[in-house]
Amino acid sequence: MFKELDPILHAQLRLAIMSLLISVKQAEFTFLKEKTNATAGNLSVQINKLKDAGYIEVTKQFSNNYPQTICQITKKGIEAFESYVKALHAYMHPGST
Image (cartoon, rainbow, N blue to C red; front, side):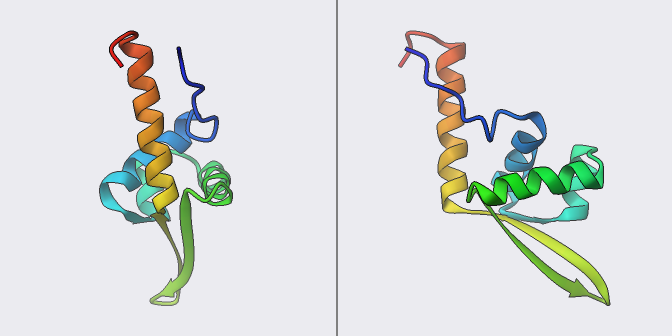
């Protein structure tokens, strides 16, 4: 009856990153760090896990001689997020699907 929840998205920080990227499509590392209150090290690790899963793309570039990391949600990431939300909904409203 209950679908298994995606373990990649079930972690709080990764879910927060994906939730932000769903709404803005792409964001700088500093924006994500500020919005999630994560440490730079933890955020970096979680971003890499999302990237390895194919849920986001990461672009590293320079802006005014400063390194800049841009994260962008992928089509696979959008589909995974929507499936996760649908599965959560089923947990909250059993029997309604």
